[in-house]
Image (cartoon, rainbow, N blue to C red; front, side, top):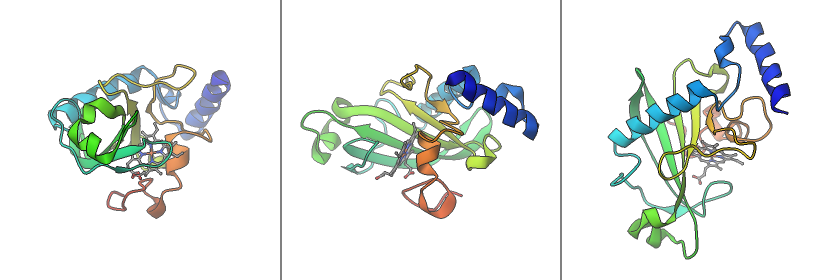
Length: 179
Ligand code: HEC
């Protein structure tokens, strides 16, 4: 399945004249390294990690957490400045909005991020997608591929497939401020 996908994307990439390095849609070396830089930039901006800025937790919907908190800002990653949206996904026994306010780290399950990286994926609004575990390591799909980059371009499941349905054509559900 992975081989077919990679060949399919390679074919499309060659047709479009894009770099062969961009052949795998996500989770390759370049994407995982970029995701690490992105985490560092988020950390410096106090958007992830200890003492991060919180926004009001609210009741979430599938596939994000039972309780969510979403915040956005602007950061610079490896020379590219752009808007970023961070969604913290909370779950676990006894989780509630109040508990999350009081002790977010006890319930944090994952940190999902969209960073608008100019020129990275014009077909999909240039979003760079990542799913981090609470400490900044990358989560993976069931095949063990890290969820970082164009997740999962050309496939009928994943960040891109689902977020394509967001209103306003920006792939963002929460608002239409970032185009
Ligand atoms: C099956 C559908 C679905 C999938 C798959 C999905 N999301 Fe979402 N996502 C949503 C919905 C719905 C919202 C709005 C939820 C809310 O805030 O109530 C959302 C919100 C977000 C937001 C906040 C910005 C916005 O659009 O409102 C981010 C960031 C985000 N998702 C990242 C990701 C990443 C990264 C992935 C892949 C690892 C992913 N999502 C996969 C449905 C999905």
